[in-house]
Length: 433
Image 1: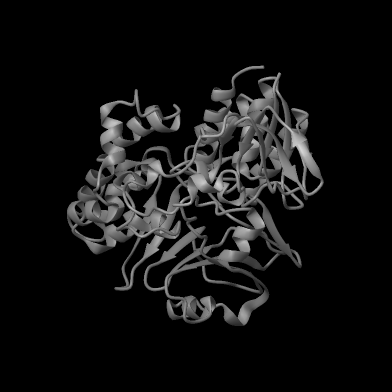
Image 2: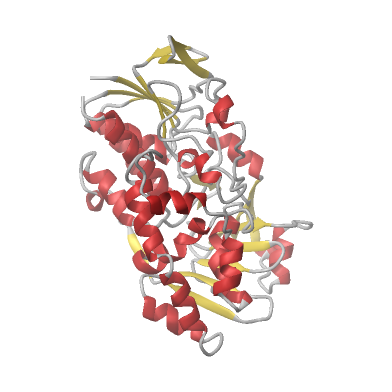
């Protein structure tokens, strides 16, 4: 049995802790804030509640595998449900398209409404990522990367200089299709010119596996994970930030906190490793992908009838999520903004024809810096600074013996499934007690 200390109580840290405890290790989790969950929590104010971070997830099999291998099945804990509509996209020329999930035929029909032949153009583009995903899944996300034995196809993919911007310009002739294809990458804080082709694989995942959520808010998944840690008798210490690792003879022996050192045989770092002086030199070339500006609003009375997520393309790029909890007759929306934000986000929203400014009774604004400080790092991980950035991130192994990494900064994808896959890699590397 190893003494394992997990640093960071976001989804990646909780997933790693639960898996390692189930494998028989003595696990302690240190979280700097006063509660677990990181971005997977709820913001509450005056009877309104909003998801603090993500409101949907891809790849439900990753979450199901986590729950099954750490205790009771997911279906007995959380009601994870598929969404028929991934999101609606509205363009500056007045056209719009609803993007269905989990169906090639439905997406083909949806894009044909924008113009003849555009549906086929879209599904051909999405299909081009099928082999890319299978390669990444088998050799990158489900197996620790080893350059000495990695297949040539993966080495070529990671070393490719082709940007996602270039791929989209070549395969999609209509600007609206390019906006849809690059949307998730842009909203995660990246420039398409700096992102590799592999960053575009999520359009394939949306079409192939759909998009999923939990009625009442995805934060319920964070609550269920916290309960799973208690079931697995993980020692959880909130309000306990890690200031550095304790290393002797080139091997980790503990974690330094304001309350004293916590002994460890293995340390799993599930926060931005730049926050720990021992690891910072190894990631000095990386930059976090910052979250967007976030505005949670509680609205009184009837509001425009919008789907759960609407993307309003332009500058700034706006996203409206309508799935918050509110008192009877009211509504709880979250507005996200990227780009040149020269005015209040609700004013920008009104310019798109969605004016709810007179109905606001509660408002909670969060800047990107506010969110990073609250969560101990960006949930969007490492910023793409060129097609070869994948090799500059740290994880799951590190140069320090006994130290592994999990979570957003340890993987190349953004969101719960990729953080969950990184936790599974860590568990496989540590092994059974």
